[in-house]
Length: 299
Image 1 (cartoon, rainbow, N blue to C red):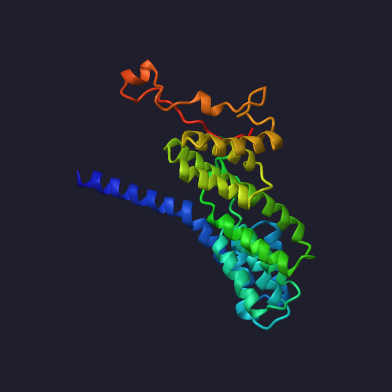
Image 2 (image 1 turned 90 degrees about the vertical axis):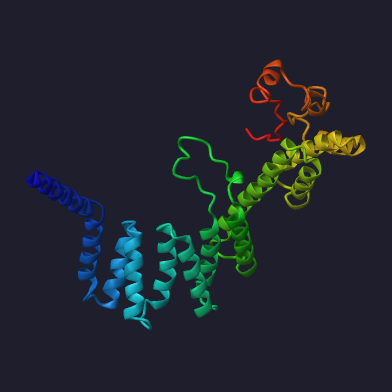
């Protein structure tokens, strides 16, 4: 019996060792090999090694070697360039916080550097967390439903960047990203407004829609904001305010789905929270509950 127990323990130890080798050993060995390769390199050779790693998209090793380059040659020929490139390496490795910190450090050390615009641009880009995620190929992800505070920060960074460097080669890209961020932020306000409609908190919904009209006038969310406000004003028994919004909606967005073929507003007449189906009543509200209209005109 003792022999069997010992054999089981021995097999378990071998499995654990194998697992360590599988998940950690290779990575550690790779770093040790990289350390050996770069230990005796000159500044230029080490910088060229970094370029090879960046070309191979080995961003974590690029970061390690850029850190080594700066520590060994803090006043070398490639000191400034390595501080810039580590921003990019951090960003591409997925460490956005480190990229932002590295960009801010570079700007503190070199506020008047000829490539300071790149550091400012990368600060905005690192906060730009609206790219599709890992599972976006399997189902649709709506950026407007996520935490948009990093997007707001990204917008502010790009704004500052464009104010400082309007002629930068990165300016056009920053402008395109700012337009997309505005659409996401506007739609986010409507996501919240639609939630308030569902809760019958019509004043809160109107206030959110007003933000869209006031701050995001050139976005596609404006049409939905007008339709939502009209609905909420009807529910609050304020038909004059509702008609004002419908008039603007008709003039600017005559094809909006809240308008029928004759151009008449239809949501307010079609929906009633109190109109419950027999199935909903039998299930005590658990099945076939009346759904609030969702003001989302996106295809």
